[in-house]
Image (cartoon, rainbow, N blue to C red; front, side):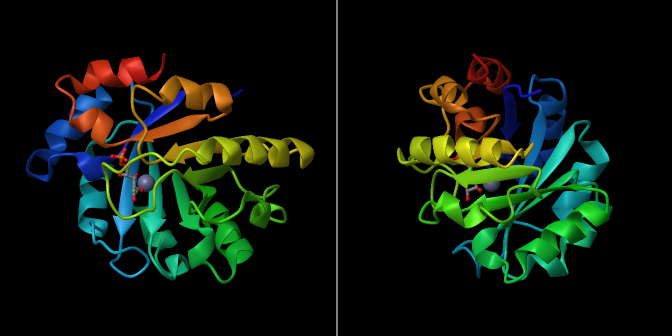
Length: 216
Ligand code: DX5
Ligand code: ZN
């Protein structure tokens, strides 16, 4: 069954008070923790790696969704799963052997997602859609929080939905980048199952209330 899930991105959390922000999310209506890992090569920014993931593992009481924006992600997926990742998503653009990497993630007991950058067409997923647990459509160019939502994403949601249905796939559709209170309900209506929100949640005066509002 598909529902409206909210996955706040820890990229926008206060790293001086990470445990406090994780506890806030534990006590909120957030469904997943979204963990953005950036290597300064696949994307023009560096975020964090295993030490932060360890803190997430220690304190997060919900499903942990790891978004790897790194080159050669296959080298690191096992360690992220050992550190508590329930889902690992890798970029189509970063995987030479995508099918092998998806299988590797699932063989280690986690769900596997594939991510498309804004300029990568949905049709590239035709031969992998039946094997993935989630498709993450980037609605900004990855690398930074707080960017403007790219409207073409709606078209890609509908194409992804068609691809899922025509292949009897059970993949969820996740949207990441520029999600806010103005577009969240439209995105769910268009067919999104999971919305990532960083800036909208953590820059608001009342993050818990914002998470609630994003669902309606
Ligand atoms: C972008 C990251 C996103 C980002 C979302 O590269 O993958 O998860 O943190 O942030 P907002 O919601 O602020 O656009
Ligand atoms: Zn992300």
